[in-house]
Image: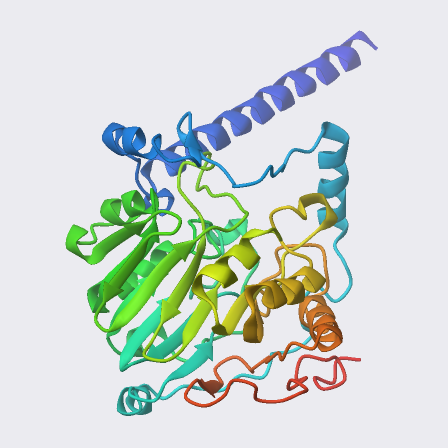
Length: 389
């Protein structure tokens, strides 16, 4: 009996030591990864921090939203959310490959003078305006995370056009530095073929650490404007947050307006609903086409991600002629079915009387004519259309 107790004690002792050793190894590896991996970007200088503190939306080293915005959850709520993620939801991923149109790189160059838009899924969009090529939040990687083991794979096995086949890019616009909007590998593949990077305050530190020429980087605060190569750019507020690694809100987040010869386009990035949409519409309207966040929402973080019904209302607030939902169709990052965003926003847009388009990934949408393309969007995303009943 005594020998049995001794054996059990030894097993527990060595098991405990093994577990402790494993934990220590994981801590060391994690710390080294956080400190050595270029994924996490650079640090803001003391001089820049001092200049940011002069802004009304920056205090004590961090940026803040224009209206009170809470992301706090108590312990029980955190445990509940973790349990929900572990359980998952039915139909959170498509059961088969989504329809997608391929983009021919040669034809893309030849038709550069034709204003058009191509959606890559999630929030990645390519636009050609006034003969210039623009990429918005080009997360073109497979996993929206600092390491492939830390995130969910893209729904599609490939892109409409691979990065190496893209033509020269005149402008890359970044809304904020979360991994599903700012992808290190994508930027590294794009940097040699991109003329200008337009980024929020603080995000320029990441680009500098990735050895992108400083002359290519243009940094913006809220309401900053820039005229460059025949286009006008403005960076406007959104209601969100930022951060890579353990840092939070040390870099700015926001939305973009791009004005060509005769049209104004809006790109929301991520963010919750708020009065800023009406303010943006009043300042920069009329807005011909608004690409609006519509996905990755949950009741527990509804102040930093809009519900689909709010997305449609944001389009009305902006005074947009036509809206398109983004931030869906590529990754599962929240507890809703993969096509719930587009189903709900389409219903609400119809109720509010605002035109909506929902193009297939890779489809080339003309921006030269009226964007009121149809009273009913192409519903390729329904389970019936995809034969996913």
